[in-house]
Amino acid sequence: MARTAFVGLGVMGYPMAGHLARHGHEVKVFNRTPAKAEAWVAQYGGTLAHSPREAAREAEIVFCMVGDDPDVRAVVYGADGILAGMAPGAILVDHTTASADLARELFAACKAQGKHFIDAPVSGGQSGAVNGILTIMCGGEEEAFARAEPVMRAYGRQITLIGGPGAGQLTKMVNQICIAGLVQALAEAINFAIKAGLDTDKVLATISKGAAQSWQMENRWKTMVEGKFDFGFAVDWMRKDLRIAMEEARRNGAPLPVTALVDQFYRLVQMKGGGRWDTSSLIQNLRDG
Ligand code: NAP
Image 1 (cartoon, rainbow, N blue to C red):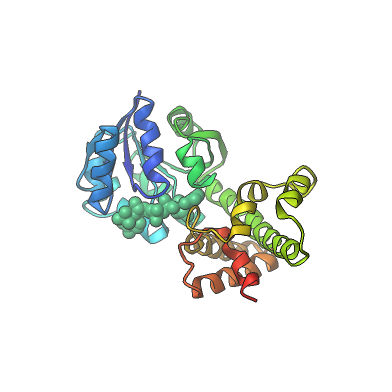
Image 2: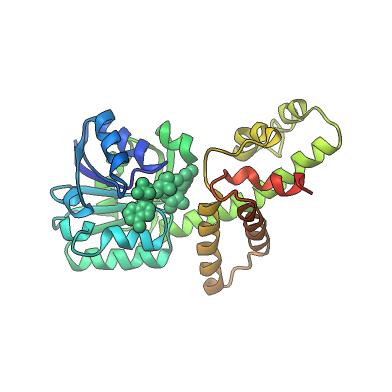
């Protein structure tokens, strides 16, 4: 069993840290809003830390799950940051979806102090975190990965070291590029089915067994028909992910025309007040006409 710390107990981090505790690992938690960390400790019985530094002290592995690049920097650097608390030899695993540049920067900052870093963004959504079946895409060195991987099994089903520092974040960009175009296509298809007067339950039951099948179709079709979006992966986060992917694409020269277009459709959803709606809310643009 490992001595761990978990920084960031949001939609994803809260249940992920819970799985660590359930699997018998020692867990010290920190959350910017203390009430969430207090609730977590009451539920799982770990230890409450009052700063990222305090959480990281004595931990063999420190997990981090916050929002965007500046949020990761805010909890890692500085006098009260994770790096200041980590012992030499310890591993920082960042599960946040952030830029590959940041991953490389943190890898170098850790290495300079005899510490290890793994970028490890996840896929599988809130339900994947709650059920402990996340897909985890990692970048870093093999030795640190070999130590962290058995611990991440507490909440991960598919855990892969893709390559060196930043490779996990680049893989997550590939993942989000796949999802963006797909969700817009699904929204157009469902709206078409409704306008055509079809029985949408029958349509789904049929085409989900054919070549059009996807995770988004299986998990989101029904709620998209019903116009329910108050759950899951927030549009604000998706736009952050697409921004990161498009910045990377500008550098590597990969054209992303559909991704750029869908990003604008998500912007429309934000303008309707749907920044915290699930990403399947793209259909609302079509239904509103
Ligand atoms: P969330 O519910 O908004 O939680 C964010 C967490 O980060 C909260 O604990 C928040 O603390 C903390 N945080 C944010 N900025 C901070 C800062 N500057 N300093 C300290 N703490 C800070 O987000 P989430 O849905 O768990 O997503 C977290 C990450 O996972 C994001 O990068 C997202 O893109 C990625 N992700 C999410 C999903 C999903 O389905 N939700 C799926 C895959 C990947 P407070 O409680 O104080 O606000």
